[in-house]
Length: 440
Image (cartoon, rainbow, N blue to C red):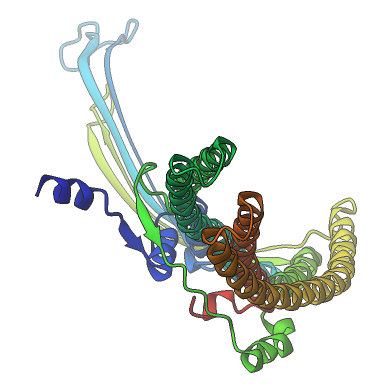
């Protein structure tokens, strides 16, 4: 029971391809940043950032003043008493002033600048989405490059474990044969050397697997030491389906789509710059309240005055000549558009080249994989015969070891060829724009 618990505790969870994709899309740092960039672009393309809405501001003010005054009449006679008129002294006379206003401003027409800028922001949002898609595609390719490396090393470990088992059996057989005088101590030593070499190869491969799993956990944003097993089953896209993807590659390639959006943005930049040639018409309006509370003075009684104002106006601004700034901006925007057209031609050529290279690599690696599969069958047959002959003493231990090494190389080369072909297929799917539309 104790041994069962120990073995059960080290069983790792199976990480399927679908689960790996899900974890990557949810947790990968680069994809999370790309998602935030989409939110930024979404905010920028919203009506709140369009310039189409009016501005409304409120102002308010309150002032308080306290004063003491003394008014003298310098020899004036009070007609009622016939005596010199007394000075008038006012203490702590309070003056209060209050005002508040609402101000509205709205641009009716700005030479169509905000209209084209609004369209430009929408295209910028589309570009950000395409950039995020490119990030996701690159991350998925990175994910499966590491995922399949884990799968390759896992299968190689199984091969090396079987190789080590056979080598240990060979040591036991050689010791029995030596005890009964059927071979020399040299055969025993050779077998022990081969066990040591096989053990080292297995240890090194296990360490490579541990390191590669850490790399995969980084892509998944998982716990660094989280253990798992991967799916080693590989399915290739049917040829007819792949041919259909290739025919529609120019419509779906993310690099070409980004270039098309950049051309639209450059075209809108020209139109935004041209808006500087036209006038700007705006509306203004305000509503205000003003209250003054004045204290009594030497000659006037105190009073409270309230004033309400409503104002509206239309303004027109036409910058007939701005020193050549608008002309320069239009010229530069046209040059930028020309550059985007040139880049488009360059990108189209590069994508065609990359597609041709990727397709050639894929076909070549598939063919290599088929050859390696046949090579494994041949070497397996050769090893089984060599093993029987070795047991009968018809071949030397060196010849048997060579057959064993040949089988190991054939099996590990077949594994490498299988995963190399699948990665080449993923790279081809990415160029056709279908990487995110297929099942893995």
